[in-house]
Structure formats: C-alpha cells, structure tokens
Image (tube, rainbow, N blue to C red; front, side, top):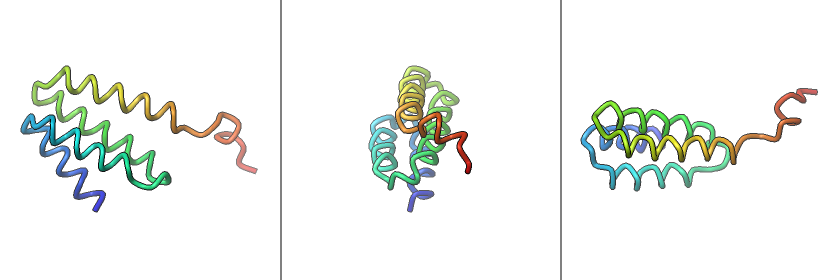
Length: 84
C-alpha cells in the first residue's frame, strides 16, 4: 500500500497535480511511527519530482515540510549514539 501511495504521489507531482500530492502526502504522514523515516524519504523524492517539472515553489514548500518533519521525528541525540 505505501509503495502504491508513493508512486501515485510522484506521478501526480510530475503532472503538476499539487492538490493530489498534498492529499497523498497526508496519507503517507499517517503511516505508523516506525515508518516515519521512510515517509520523509518518500516526501523528499516527491518534492524533487515537483521541482523537476517546474513547480519550484511547491517543491520548496514540501521540502521545508520534510526537513521540519525530520527534525521533529529524529531520535534524541543520546539515543542515536548509544548502541549498548
């Protein structure tokens, strides 16, 4: 299911269907928390697809959302380096 949503989001981005991209990104955002990192990567590639097809402002907005999401959902610093 998640792969299908990702492909649909990137396809809609290529067509410039920003409203559909936003809806599909919202679907991806509601995936289980353990898939949050993958969500950021999927959204990143969708943003790149928008930019590649001339939708630079929309791409920048989505990229900002990706970066904000990464900062909010990243593990605490001490958890990232404590592998004991």
